[in-house]
Image (cartoon, rainbow, N blue to C red; front, side, top):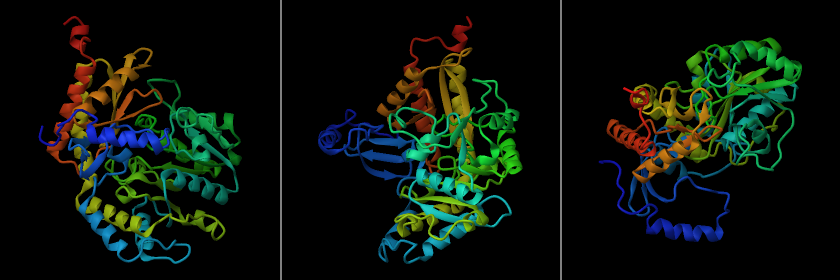
Length: 444
């Protein structure tokens, strides 16, 4: 292997020493996917404190479409840090905020004039989108969907579907209604059922917004069935409800479009952004119709650190890098390679029952019984562990932890991609060792 290197046991001695220190002072719920600790990151490669090298197919949970330490972002951060680190735009404003807002407003879909507000995290962006929707419509109720993930604040936790570990006994916010997500593999709902279900669950005149991930992230990279997003847009317009596209994970080029919703040619009222927006620095945004922001009182939204000037400087370079390095086109070409590889694995191993996604935002689902679609979390987790032991960091997903999703940097090289996919293939083979392939199962 050229780009991965495992020279010690995992975790190595330096990582074990850090874990010993961690146990004494770090809050135990702050669990980590990896048992090793990063020392250096470049592009798609992570080196740990023991000198082992891994291909990062999680991209810091989707925060690194331009990779670890992209030179343009690093240079921008250094330059901005030499001028000022913080001012708070609501106290003393600054140009990087305006420049980034101009760039995002220009790239948003549709003819309506757009405004932009910046915050710190994806959850904060979603929560502010709800505030904006409530303020603009003078309504309170919010509609979300099964399988959704929108964050971990009290409000966004209510909007998120999966109970553990996100909800636990923390309590949730009121006025949130959850509707079924049409999935031909698992239920009989169709896009045409959306209006009927809405009317059965909540008075539409009370609904401020329907919030949906154009492609579900934590839920398992679920792609909406044909016509579903279009039906949501039709119904929300009919009842004066805002449509909010939660693009915190699906945005920033991963699908081959800057915003995933653009794959459907739909103009939502608001878009929430985060994760990859600032090359790994904390930043998020709400982009949407200017009239909705203008309906709110002055200072009714804001954040002390939201739109930090250093993060804005990095974010400007992220958009420039996406354009300069043609990363939207790269996402499409990467996606073709991944899908071809995953389709081959699915043909060989019956435990892989679905390959899905758009562009480079792709996932595989492990299922025990195709007829009942029984989740196979055990095999999925074995694949993740085996791949990590051999140099590829993978992320799981799905309500039942039986999905592997790829959130790899779009700057990954062809060689790195092929090496990573080879390791994943071997991990699948190891995890299902002793089970018959499809040909064997059919008696061929």
